[in-house]
Length: 156
Length: 175
Figure 1 (tube, rainbow over the protein chains, first blue to last red):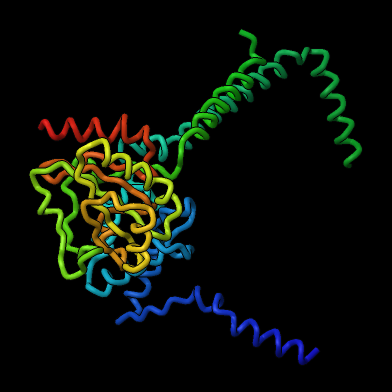
Figure 2: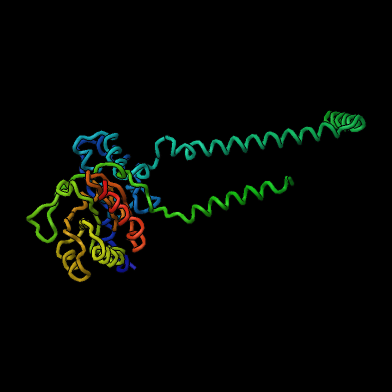
């Protein structure tokens, strides 16, 4: 068993694919590194539909990470870097698209649907209430009172 | 109207919208470059690395930039379309050899034919980033003033050439 473990860990360590995911990037300040991490979280990998730059191993994602790194090291601000990406790849490169006419429904749509659902729910509840109130006759009310009174006596 | 039908109607509307969504290709993105000046660059020619090409030299001409690579499988499918395009039409076709080895690229053109007036070599893929390239092949049409007028992502078909690219080039040449 011990031999097996040693062989296994050697095989794992020798496998180049476990190193492939590690990209060494050295920054001058910890703030720069934080900004880098945040930016690659917020930028989309354009070739892999639903991954950000941080999570993708695609060639283009690597290049764009390199670009972000280069721009941070050169002292560009976050806005400048995002602008750089948007002028080249469009709004799609951002995971949080900006609020404008073309993206209006995207941002407001869920709230509109929620409001409609709320209105429908309120109407539904009101209708049910009406039904209950109108069907309670005087006779029923008397019975209800009796039942409640019995309950109270039992509690004592 | 029967109230029971309302959920059914809502469901049908939803299905129609989702159905439309299925017919669209999520890889096709609107290019932010349409109507804007084509990004500048200076790159060595693939066949004469000591000579350089820059889009500035194409001012006054309508031209097509085609991004290709020898490792790109769909470029091979596209290549015969480009070969026949330049046989039947007079167009300025420039190739941008994207993230490729020079030797591989030359061998590839030797094997499949070279439709390009010239190709430039972008080994690092940096000019690709400047042009917003995210999938190879990509094809841009640039007018006489150096403004991008069309971007086609993915391989162009004979139909794209006949119905889109060539008519646009002809129109732009009249401008």
